[in-house]
Length: 316
Image (cartoon, rainbow, N blue to C red; front, side, top):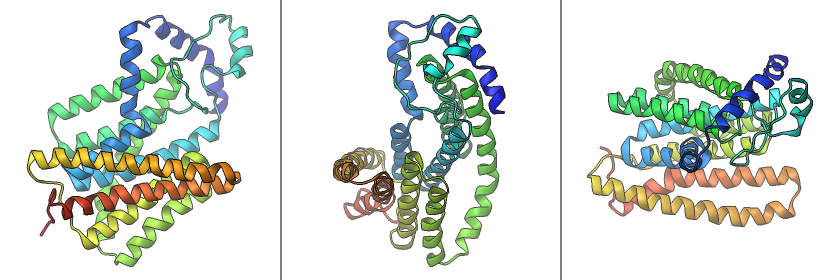
């Protein structure tokens, strides 16, 4: 598979050159915005808004779905180790193929390239919401967004078409498995004690991270750990409801995002200081803890605040 991916680099590069020929001022500003709907920060906003303001259950599902699909994508990226399209590693391949022109990416993205997490994550998150909400207009919107996010990665020059195709395939398979497995998993969890739920919320992310202790996994699994513990504690003590009047939902979303980003940047400054003074391993541990705290804030602290300030009510 790796040899095949390397063999089609010239084809993928020619596709990118043809896409680059389409560049203009409007699209150069449009696609960096579109790609944000599939990146880490954009997904954090989407997950939070759904969990706080629309549907708690769907918000919980897309949170775990995205974080674990991100861990899967990280593993696949490292398995194949294909550099980004602008990497010097392709010089010989491109020269032998008679390709003399080089692309100029519009943004910077760290390697590896295959596969596109933005595309894979967009399929999982937007695809699941389309399935859960069962609204024709939303399904159409989800398909359009997934398509635009996938194309944006090529337009911006940070992914080959094979990266995007790979992200689409893995994302669709992951989504099908998620939709099939979710009711069985929820039914099984409902029969477990809170002790077991806390244990699973902590141990599963830690095991996934230990198996692949890299920065990206420290981020996703740290968030999964914090969110998991937060969700269990919320269900045990709060029974938070995402329903309510429109003005309450809007206010929850606005206040919640302010709180989360304040915590995010505050922890980033605090733990960033420690990162600089520690070794690589400790820096990863601090990152895991930082995102665990952020996840816990989103999963429990913010809903607790909404209930205490009467911006949300508790379910019977």
